[in-house]
Length: 95
Image 1: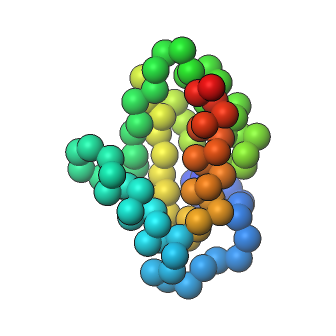
Image 2: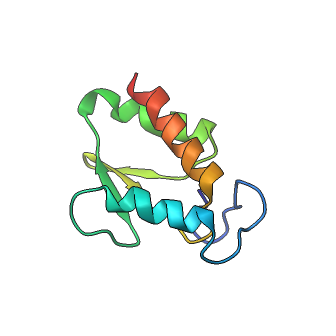
C-alpha cells in the first residue's frame, strides 16, 4: 500500500478508477465494525504488536502502530495484489 507523499507505490500499474482493487477494498472495509474513514485503525493484541510492522515492511506495505492499533490508509489506487500482500503479511505476523 502506498504511503504518504513522496512514497513510491508498490503493486504494479494503476488500475482504472473504480476497478477491482477499489471494489475489493470497499468490501473488506465494510466487514469492519464502526465507521470507516480515510484512516483505518485495527486493534492489535499486545503479543503481536512488535511483529506487525516488520512483517508489513517486508511485504512492501506501509502502516503505523498508534497505541494499541494498526493504522492503515488505503487509497483508491490500492489494488487486489496490495490487499493480498497486506493480508498475507498480517497472517504471518499473528502466527
